[in-house]
Length: 225
Image (tube, rainbow, N blue to C red; front, side, top):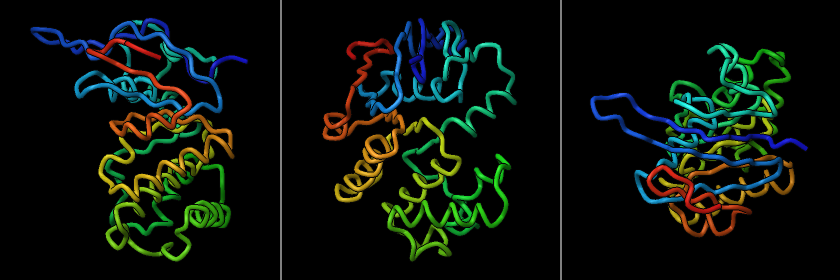
């Protein structure tokens, strides 16, 4: 079986009077059902690598394939379609829209993809939020929730279109230890019970130790896998 996501010699350099190399010569393959932690010191290129894997940025050189499809020649519209249907994102700060309810936030990716009708979207958002222990909060605004609850809403939103790959950038970085453990348990269950692939940037050593695989970066280079 082909890797879900694969890179060959991926490098990202920011053009400037003195060019800045964010990641350099990254070659890796990640299969379905893996929980991968990306670790490394601050400034080592962890988030830069995640943004490249999530098609939020383009490599300066090297190749990146998702589900066997080379992404190099894709238009912005094609890249956006992959992000919407194949990738789910969870960030350190949840980025929920404050003017919408919890349920409406989860429905946003479904509305953009356009596969489901109104009733089906409502049913799916209710199912996802209920599975994450948020059934009693469907019609609340994000500012009525705790930090841990808001992050669980963000996880539900990342699953809205049932993507095979979840990309998380410091998903527990702004949470207390109890909420961090809850979010980790949810991500772990997505891998074990639903067969999702999770790639998470983290400074949390306990979370990294529990992942099925660790990718460690130093100065933008792959130091350990």
